[in-house]
Image 1 (cartoon, rainbow over the protein chains, first blue to last red):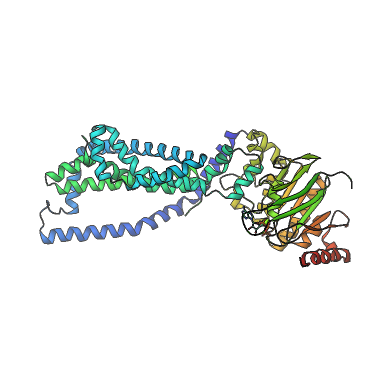
Image 2 (image 1 turned 45 degrees about the vertical axis):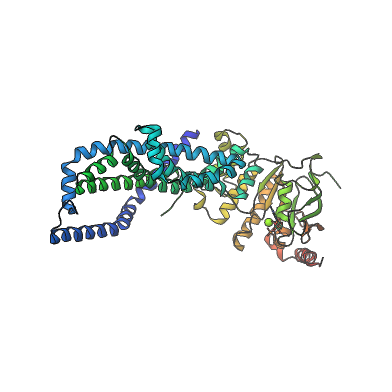
Length: 276
Length: 251
Ligand SMILES: Nc1ncnc2c1ncn2[C@@H]1O[C@H](COP(=O)(O)OP(=O)(O)OP(=O)(O)O)[C@@H](O)[C@H]1O
Ligand SMILES: [Mg+2]
């Protein structure tokens, strides 16, 4: 059997197993999300009731129904601002992944780099982004770059650290086994350290991706020509609290969707790592 | 003494700490011989194997294979560590071919080499399974398959059955004895089970407590192939008693 044939067969058996478990898994998803959903609905109900009863002006606190209504009415404008935010998020996160992987692999192969880089990695997390972001705009202008830098700064750390720790957590006996087989350092990495680190990587990816969207919005808030951050800022200045909240809902939806997507990718990449 | 396959020549090894671990361990292994190494827990059996396998440099002493200095070389030995270390991201078949692939063999060739061994190793039908689908005994057989398929001159097995229940363990001993007869391996086996050592070996090397050296070589003159009824024979019991006495000798 060719290597590719083997891979195909493996994917196929994986699929076969999936179709067996689809029903219980769907029930599981409902079971997991259901309670949150009920809680959200109750919260929205209370909110709606309070706004109606107290007769609050929508500039102060719009009712959920009004947020939905106005959000829908302005859907084209919101969508037009969502696309650039998504773009920035994607580019920034990819940059962050490249940076995180490069650093982590380099650190794994070059021991002194670990000592040299660890304090710098930690230091990068103590940078007050609020103060740095405007400077980035001064340095890099209003284009894509400053926003990408902000996203990368807030998201690459969990990814790099997750990978570095994942590589380092490789069982000493596993390393010895590979060495006894005559494996070079590179092959030890490829056959054991890398696959062994992937579960941790996906955990880190989830942490990173939740920061990515908010990071993008923050970066836009500071300076951009379009995007959800800009949209929120403009609407806030014209007291359209309802539209600010509508954009917040879109943001949250984006984050949750990306978060859920990491599970899908994880299942495709490391089907052997059965969790939950 | 006849021809020798492996010479363990006065190996010494210390780690940072109060006592050395290996304090001049020396013995020989003949071609096709099955030698068990027993000794008190923590005396340095695994360390000895690490040094023989070329994973840890000795402070002094040499390892000879076929008369040539093989100290620090990994290629004459196929090493099976104390845990099975089957990797969850590989199928059972791909776990058993790991050593071959790592050595640069094409995956397809490696699979062709490993596949025929699945039947005699009692793993037929589990080629595409994941390690977690295997029972404890099957995991050990898969780990052993991964070891022998490398086709190295000497097998180093570190407590291969240590984690198994006694019934499975007995089955595995019978099976290993049969496989050894069939494939004519040269085997060094670590165990802390005296009965297992007697049952499987041509010779048992008894190590003393740390800092360890060889206390005695006990030749096991029992007919082959071995049967489990032998365990109750007077000769078997006498050998067990002798090994037990050597192990318990005060230092
Ligand atoms: N890398 C190391 N660094 C420091 N000490 C070590 C190292 N490896 C082993 N030792 C020490 O050497 C001694 C012997 O260890 P080893 O694992 O060889 O014993 P063992 O006879 O195999 O024990 P067991 O029967 O429990 O498997 C132990 O006291 C252990 O703590
Ligand atoms: Mg040991």
